[in-house]
Image (cartoon, rainbow, N blue to C red; front, side, top):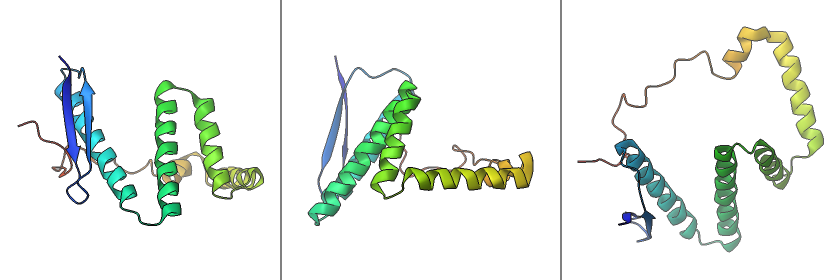
Length: 142
C-alpha cells in the first residue's frame, strides 16, 4: 500500500503531498519529509509573489535548479554544464566573460600554489557537524 507525506505552508495554505512506496530506512524518510517541506516552502514563496514577471522568473529558477540536481544525480555532467551555461547566459554572462574568469582563476592558482587552493575553496576549514545542533526544519520521527 502506498505511503504518503504531506507538507503545508501555514502562511499560504499551500499543501504538497508525496505518495509512493517509501524506503524503510528512517533517514530516507526524513529526507523525503525535508525535501517535501523545502519544495512546499519554495512554492509558497513563489506563489506569494504578486509581480507576474518576478513570479515566472522564480519558477524558472527553481525549475533550472531541480534540472541541475536531476542531472547531477544521474551523473550527466554534459547536461549539468549545459544548464549552468544556459543560466549564466540568461544572467547576461557571455562565454567570453567565462573564459576571462577561468584565466583569472588559473593565474591566481599559479600564484598561490596548491595549499592556497584549499583555502580559496574553503576546504581548509573543518566542516560543521550536521548532527551537532538540532535543526528546527528537520522533521521528527517521534
